Image (spheres, helix red, strand yellow):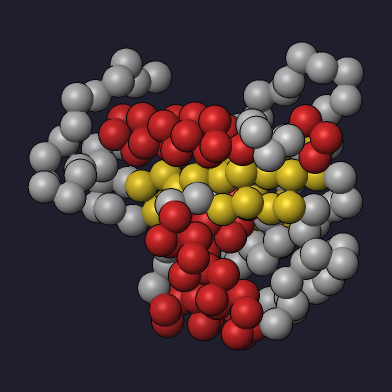
Length: 161
């Protein structure tokens, strides 16, 4: 979720492999170089994006971190068009993350969901499958929160929490 111009992790499910990603509930991270942060920011109003970007520093964490505001805003537009974000070693070398937005009953993005793994586990052949599954999970959560589709009707609800 977005809190004080950063993302804060509110839930985490650990993988079963020996090599895992270090994060924990309550951890804060920058919005500009994390999949979860970028996808939440991409769906904010232009005024809110400008406000947040004027209050944060686009700090470089790796050679892949975007630090140019114009390029970053173009990247946010691309995220909105695709419906997901990828963090490809932007906050930490060797880490890849795919994130999708979670909408509330008013159609506002209030959170995001992601799958993060060591880059070696995210071969190009797996990316489309992970994108599809993350978007599906985000959609199911959104529906449970009362999100309606473009035709102003509630989709068939999955079993909600």
